[in-house]
Image 1: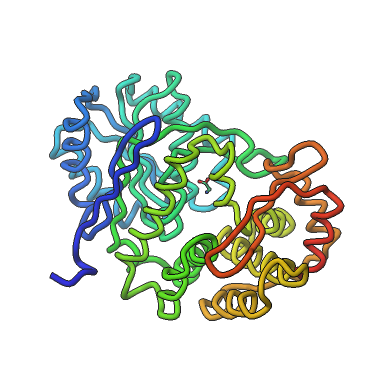
Image 2: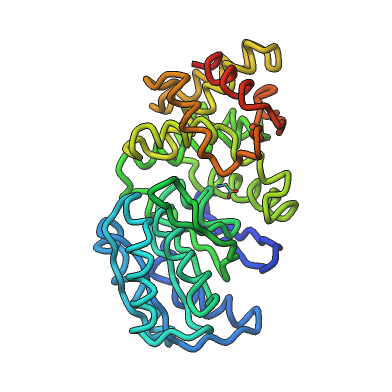
Length: 361
Ligand code: GLY
């Protein structure tokens, strides 16, 4: 069996312990995977489960997921939301809580988030808060969800005032990454996830960075597993983002500002990629990173069809960045680029943040 066809399991040991299963044909086996994971942990579920997807993913995979869950003895309820970031809102959150109650979910009921980052965050927040918390399984169908958002227990919705402003930590019981789902992913979604993959390479893994001289597709198994392993290590060291987990925010301060300035029309991974390039250039300008490393980073991002800058000016981006959750009084924790595979978390003053943004553009 080629290495790319091999099923991989990465164990995450945080406040809850669980496997991230990376492989093929997994959506059609999700019922058995959930049943086995719950049995292995000695947990018993009440049998009711809410399968949350959207109107892109639902028509492709919800029937197969629900059939598999039913075959494994679950009473699966199929709920589909409109696709897109706008769904991560209070109204849809309320709707899903109502759907959970209507389905008769109890505290030992299960929410299955079947989709990308938006559905994972939203359905995860429902699971974290319904009856003060029920069980959650993440079935990631986008590259971004596989390498980042489905792992580590962050759940959230957006408020009109900003992204992810209401949320909770809830570690899932199981994460399923079905690599076959990447084949049906539109190219722009694939490059969006690649933005987060490049981020991991810059953050701490020069070997992963070098793998990305080739496209992700063709080596998606090892790429997803490597990113999950990096995230596992970070989450195990700092589940609640008191320190080390902040490193995952590389490119995110400027990235979130770009998303906000665009009214969330620029997708997250694209904005993060631009944020990483801006940070790399700023750090090179400050003598914190070799110019050649910054140039390699910018070339790599561009090579994957991702943006390396933005049309928004420093003032606009700075104003938008002030809404970031990472703001601490009159400072901000930013992740500086020290080279390919080397980063540093540093608290900077707000005027310094403004300078960094300007130098990176
Ligand atoms: N996506 C960043 C984190 O999970 O901490």
